[in-house]
Each structure stands twice: as C-alpha cells, then as structure tokens.
Length: 255
Image (tube, rainbow, N blue to C red; front, side, top):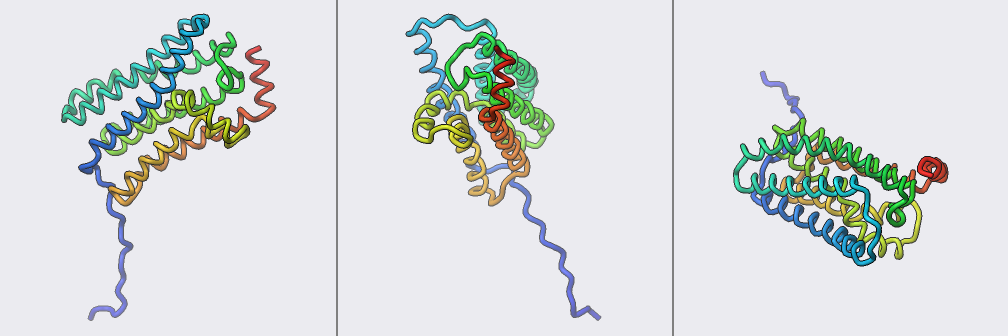
C-alpha cells in the first residue's frame, strides 16, 4: 500500500550553463571596454608627460608598464584564440600568462615603493597612504589569477575569474580620466575616494553578473566569491587611505 504522505526531495537548482551563444560577443565587448578605459587614461597621461617635459620615470616604472601592456595583449590573444576555436594554442599560451602574472605581482609593489620614495606623480597616487590601494590591487589580482589557474579546466569559472582579475587592476586607467570629475562632484572621504578610483571598473564587474542573470538566470559561485574578494580589498584600501594613523605611518615610511 502506498503511503498517503509522499516525501519529496528538495529540487536541486539547474547547473550553471557552461556556454551561451552570446558569450563570444560579451567577453570581446568587455575586453574592448577595458582597453578603452585604459587607453583614455594612460594615453592622456603620456601626452601630458611629454608636453610638460617632466623628468623621466625610473626604469622600473617603464618595466611595470610594459608588463601590464603585455598582460593586456596576452589576454586579448587568449580571448581571440577561444573565439576562433583554438583551445590548444590558448592552453599553451596560458603557461606564459602564469609566468607574466607572477612577474606583475612582484613588479607592482616594487614599483609603488620606488615611486613613493622618489615622490613622483600627483595626488592621490603620489601620497604615501595610496600604497594601500596599490598593494590591495595586486593582492586582488594575485588571488584571482591563482583561482583562475586552479579552475583552468572549468571554462565558465576560468573565464570569469580572468575577467575579474584584469578589472581588479584596471582602476588606474579609468581613474586618470574619471577620478578628477568624480572627486569634484562628490568631494573627499571614504565613499567619494572609492568611487573616484573604482566606480567604473565596479560597473563592469557588476555587468558580468547582470549578463549571467540574463543568460543563465543565476550567478556563478566563483563570480560571487570574486566580487566579494575585490570589493572587500577595495573598501579596506579606501578605509586605510582616509585613516589618519595609516597616513602618518606611511608618511614616515616614505619620508
């Protein structure tokens, strides 16, 4: 006799779809937007540098810039390789990506220290307290790249982690042309400082989630973890930059 009380197992959510027909155009579009933000920021910065005949930056700054551009070119190549169904070449080139990422993780803090000791640049990046932002960004990048390498056999997770990784360090380019107007409009303080640096990349980061909700009706777990990781370190950096004790400590450190 069948029991009148039926027991139903909880319905499991559908797995995250590994592919959608819009993915090819989405990742390429986000890459183009990142390139645009960086070129608009650093392009005008380079023009201003040569027009005003400023003193040349230390060699490590140029090496750091070359490594960052190399990473952007590598990411572009990797996205185009997958777009053209050349996964084997993509995987081989990934080994070079791991090596370059390791170099960037070392170069980032080293360059920041050299620049602060030489008192180069303009506020807020020239202020010693800004090292919180620079170190926080490279920690963001290192954590996301490490996770992407671990998830390299999980295509949807790997793609989102790589995109989050570049967005975590793209703030410098965006802030060079958006930071000033945002600071003028919002003033100074914890949230205005965060917005002047990270609002534009944050919009692109959240846009990944909007895209996944539109195409999959759900967020990928690594995306959720990655967003929490990025925003947590950004908010810590903003807090430290505006903290008097941190300002005094870094001021003495780079005096």
